[in-house]
Structures are given as C-alpha cells and as structure tokens.
Length: 247
Image (cartoon, rainbow, N blue to C red; front, side, top):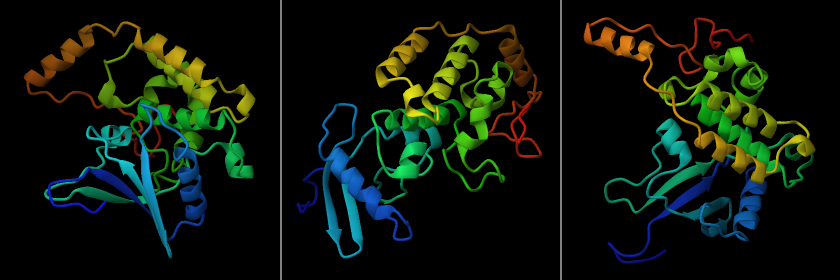
C-alpha cells in the first residue's frame, strides 16, 4: 500500500512460483478460501494482485512469526529498513489430502489431514517435504506414518530438541492423534472438535520430572565428557533412517 516512509502497515507478501504446475489453481483457491473467512487464529488475507504472470498474495504480518518459523528457524520477517517480506508460494503438496490430490475436491475433513501433517512436523521437527533427505524419505508422511502406530518406535522419530519436555504417554497420544488425522479415507478422520479435545487433554498432562538420567547427563557435561548422541530423524544413522526404523 503506497504510504510515506515510516507510516502505513507492515505486510507479508507471497509471490507465485513461475515454475509451479498448479500454482495458479492454488493461488485462486487461497484467494477464494481466505477471502471469505475471518478468525482470530487465521492469518488475514488483505489483498491480492494478478497482472500478466505476476500473482501475489498480501497477508497481515505476524510479528511473532509463523509456526514454520518456530519449527524450522525460517527467516520470514523484514530486516533493516524493509517494510515487507516477499516469498514464493510453494503450494500445498505434502499437506494436501489424498482425495484433493486425486479429484481436486475439498471436503470438510480434508483440512484435518493437512493438520495431521503439521502435527507430524511438530513431533519430528522435520519438514513435510524435503528433497535433501535420502531417497524414500522426501515425503514425511510416506516415510514415518507406518511408525506412528508402533509404541516402541516412538523415540526414533520424536524431535530430540524437545526431549524431556513431555511424558511418554503424551507423546504416544499425540502420535495416535496424528495417525488418525492422516487416515486415507476422510470419514475415518476425527472432526476438528475431536482433535482440539484430544490436544487439550494432552496439554493438561503433567510433564516428566527431572530424571536421574538427565542429572547424570548434565553431570557428564560438567566433567567434560561428551554425552551419548540421541538419534532421531534430525540426526540420521549412516543409512539415513531413524534408529529402529526400516525403509
């Protein structure tokens, strides 16, 4: 929005990736979807631009950053004298429900699937799509969904950065909820109300107390000894798979 320096409002701008095969459809869908919705927990779409091949989306700027920023330390905010940020629209591949990918139709529980992908990102600290990972691990859901139902594999995919900040029961329930959200058939997924109820139950669970192992771990650091590394998808083994996980 034209304004004098030091005035106006701060905004975030997304720019279409010209190499995207379905970029226009995704851009149009976001305009139609966010243009009709207004909710305190939903980023506001302030405007859009369509001129020749230039497709832009203008959002309100989130001062505290996005969930992606907190998870992956992505730089999204302006710096120096910049008043806005320009990023590419990367599309929804990796978050889109199977029925949407197959038919292009969105259903009430299609968003539940997308939220399940976000939950998996939060549990693992890994991106939904990352071509830098070894073959067979590019798509996070395809790679780790088979492990979510296996209690013994829980620690093999949990983000090592949050170790000790949750109880095993809470982690297991979060994994089971994620698995339900990622069901292939929409009717088998929970409603968002059910999802919220379970998340509130998980949040109310008591966090684990400082264990003897953590005390020993801390002591070894003070003695100058290197603690034994904890392997997770963020710290893959020589074969690029999480400990105890097969391809």
